[in-house]
Image (cartoon, rainbow, N blue to C red; front, side, top):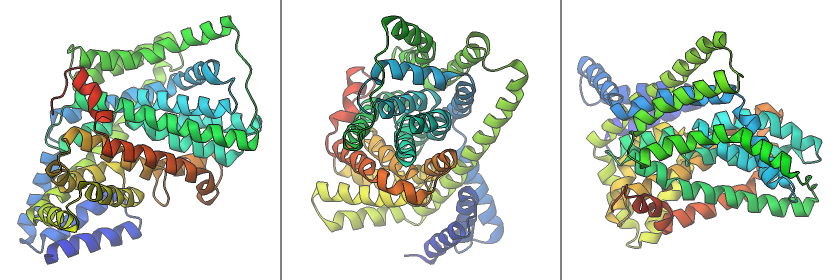
Amino acid sequence: MDWSVVVLLVTFVVLLILNVPISIGIGIATFAAMLFTIDFGPAAVTVAQRMASGINSFALLAIPFFVLSGLLMGRGGIAHRLIEFAKVLIGMLPGGLAFVNIISCTLFGAISGSAVAATSAIGGFMIPTMEKEGYDKNFNTAVTVASSTTGLLIPPSNILIVYSLASGGVSIAALFIAGYLPGILVALSLMAVCAVYAKVHGYPVGVVPTRKELFRKTFDAIPSLFLIVLVIGGIVGGFFTATEASVIAVLYSLLLSVFVYREVKLPELPEIFIKSVETTAIVMLLIATSTAMSWMLSYENIPQSISAALMGISDNPFMILLTINLVLLLVGIFMDMTPAVLIFTPIFLPVAMELGMSPLHFGIMMVLNLCIGLCTPPVGSVLFVGCGIAKTSIAKLVKPLMPMYAAMIVVLMLVTYVPAISEFLPTFFGLYEK
């Protein structure tokens, strides 16, 4: 291994240990490694150029709009209506509030495109509500944390847009549609865990809703749910691109939050806009520095070396894909999703394609894998948000999370080794040809 790569890895690890923001750490580590290859001036220019080119993509324009749409939805009373809708659907089952939590997080995560937003919006209501009904607080938090990640698979999903960039242009529309079945499978697997947990601990059964109540709460939730139909239906129908769909999502969210539900007042809009700018800036800086690091690794032929090493481990595709999943699970524990996708896609995608896996299939596998890292200590961002809302510790969540990790990993293995789970819907709608 070249000394520049050693410097890059050591610098990056040290900065992570020192709790330097990951985007800054990636940038500094890349620049330090570059100094072993060229002089200071050219190194600075090269890193800056690679960072600029990394965010010079029309597809990335969708990210700030989906971020703004998610913030408007989060403040616009959507979460409460989705929770009430889920309650009348399945709240009467044993352990029904846990199912309500999962469905609400899945729906809100899909609408907002953010696992953190889903944890905050749904968890802020469901965690104390479930506790009042006799559920254990740590179990409630674990359910919220685990189920919030499903929204990153079900569109609109910013991380799938980032993967499209990293993979060299896999159709965003195809990726969006491909995430539905895996996301639903994750939600169902978590519900299965909750059903067993509720039976063992004797959790209460909810009240069966009246027909009038069912109709009213379903009617209240329809405008929120229609956003998914509007965005995905428009993309699949060829009415607009994913980037254009993000603008449609903002306009619809604005209309719904300000004029229909009236939960967001006009004077509050500047604050929401500023928050969306801050979030977008963080994401874009991550993309820029991660792209520079990815280029540096490619310049040193690291992807080719790792590919050769993996292919040398075994000639069994099952074992190689298992190894890639184990590495990604480890990476997800310590690294945010965006840099992980940008850095490791160029490394592992060629290996996966050599094994006959399509870029679409690999992308869904990778995102699902890294979703597990969001709720895994020590760095899982969603885990920290959940602990903050519930006022509990990570150590207390580990036990109720363990069966949920197991369920998510089972789904990950199914998605890895059964390509149809990811490829059926995009192929059916004519959005993808292998």
